[in-house]
Length: 347
Image (tube, rainbow, N blue to C red; front, side):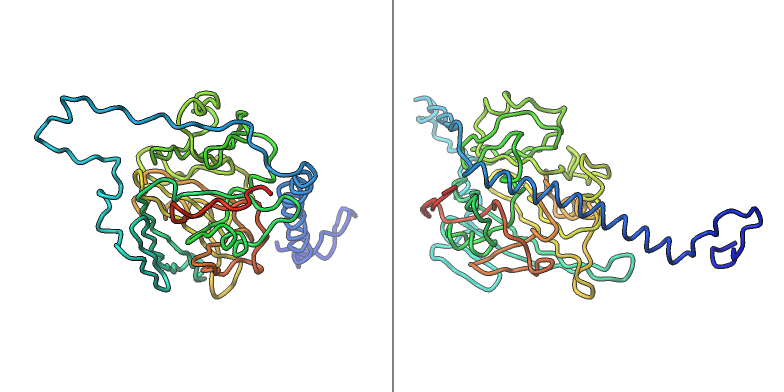
C-alpha cells in the first residue's frame, strides 16, 4: 500500500507522512551531509591554514647523482639507448621550434595535446571530460605551486603567475595539516596518513600507495620530487580499474573530477571531468573515473580534489567549464618549460 492510500491509522497512532514529504526530508538530510562535509573539508581547514601563514618547507630532497659509467662501458663499440634519455626516447613528440595550437603545445622540451571526450551516462545525460597527454624531456617541467595563504587564487591566476603551459587543480594541500607532503623536492610534512598517497620521483616514475603499503620515512629516503595525499588511488597494480576506494561516500559519488595518470617515466596525463551541469556534463562516480585511466592504458592513476575545484588551464585560459564557475585553489599541478622561473611560491 502506498503512502497516499493510508489516510487513517486504525490503531489510533500518528498518521504516516505523505511520500512527497519523505522525499523532501531525504533531500534535506543529503544536503545537510554535503554542507557538513564542505565545512570540514574546505572552510575550516582553509581558515586555519591562512592563520598559520605560508607553507614552509622543513627539508629539501637532494637527488642522488646518476651512476658513473665505467671505462669499459665507454669503450664499448655498441651504443645502447638510454631509457632515461627522454629527449631521445620521445623525440617524435617534440619539435625544434615552439608550436602552439588551440589544443596543443610542442617544443624541444615538451609535448601537450588535449582531447575532448563525451560519454552518455545511464540516465541519458552527457558527461564531458578532457585528457591532456603529456611528454617531457626533463622532469623539471612537471611542477607544483601553492597559492597565497592569505587569499586563495583562481586556477587562471595561478597558471599565469607561474608561467604554466598546462595546469590542473591539486589536492588542496593547503587545507591539510598532516600527512606526507613534498612539492618540487621540498618537504613540508612527513607524517603517515590513512589516505592513499601518490609519489612522483625524480627519475620520473610514479607510484600510488594505500596506507598499509608504505612508511613515510621509507618514501622520504628515496628521491621524492612530488607527493599528494588526497586520493584515492584509482588503478590496481595490473592497470585495471579499482571498484572499491579508500575514501568517503561524498567523494566516491557522482562529481566533477580531476586526476593524474602515469604511463612511464616522462609520459603522463591530466584528466579533468566536468559535472553538475545538466545538458552539458552530468559528472561521474569514482568507478567510472577509474575506468577512464584504465582505458587510456595508464599504469597508475590518482584522484585529486574535485567538485567546484576541478579545472584545467591551457595557455593561461580555462579549458574546461568548472562547476558553479569554479573555486579559488590552494595549489596546482602544472607543466612549464624547464627554464621558467619558480615565481613567488608561498609568498
